[in-house]
Amino acid sequence: MIVLTTVADMVKARDLAVRPLGLVPTMGYLHEGHLTLARQARQETRTVVASIFVNPTQFGPAEDFASYPRDMERDLTMLRSEGVDIVFAPTVDEMYPKGYSTYVDVEGVTKPLEGARRPGHFQGVATVVAKLFTIVRPDRSYFGQKDGQQVAVVKRMTLDLNLGTEIIVVRTVREPDGLAMSSRNVYLTPAERRAAPVLYLALCRVRELWQQGQRDAEAMRQEMVRLITSEPLAQVDYVSIAAATTLEELAQVNGPAMVSLAVRFGRTHLIDNISLP
Ligand code: AMP
Image 1 (spheres, rainbow, N blue to C red):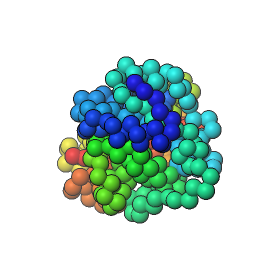
Image 2 (image 1 turned 120 degrees about the vertical axis):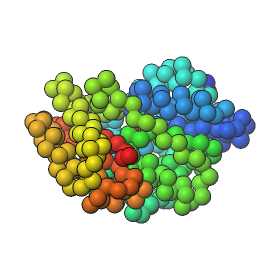
Image 3 (image 1 turned 90 degrees about the vertical axis):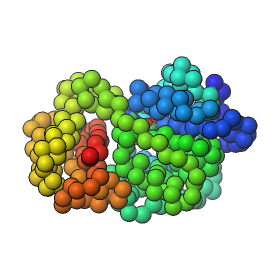
Image 4 (image 1 turned 180 degrees about the horizontal axis):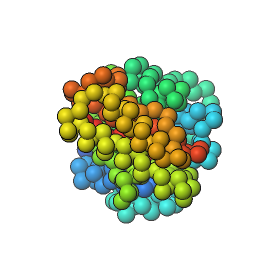
């Protein structure tokens, strides 16, 4: 496994790489969710590139960019054992040198949910992903369903800008009690950690209602709020039942939908989602 830190070296390596080439973009502090993406890339492509870059442009001024957990040595060990070929780990200055002025704005899907709660977040995501696609030129790019709105944004941008990479979505990897794995779970206190599976419980309850024939989205949103507020440490940011591609809120669930929620435990924001059907 080789570790590259400059754009110039990454461009050289991608030009020499055996195709198809798979890209797994991450912000590091890896867990089993990230490794599942890497494993699938390893199975489906000849050259696997994982990027590790805590992207400052997707963090708001009051967010945790400076304190976001980092452990490069551990990450590299984990990626090596998954058979990753190249790790691209640029510095902030390498990605955003002095004078940097170009940002990608995706309309529509970036506006609700996390976009409303975190202004500028998806502009940062779209910008860094567009840059990674341009630098690495992957045939296939692997993203987790865990960040469901991010998937919708990246798919929209890739289509609109003809970026020419196939977006592969990988199922959410969960702890045994249902909590979606996330680098930010380390922020939870033991009591918050015990309460956190309520997110998945609420999502599973909606799936159950839907399977029983419920189609009224508002009734299902209310049931999610009821379940989450029964957990005293949890504060609901939003619950949503939206059309899968556009993320417009639904009145009736008659086609593909994303059921998602954001819940705060103390200072930690957790998000999760499931797809219907
Ligand atoms: P991050 O490092 O949080 O930016 O995540 C990098 C990639 O891993 C994104 O595509 C995430 O959606 C994906 N990912 C993070 N957590 C999970 C999980 N629990 N299951 C599946 N994919 C995940």
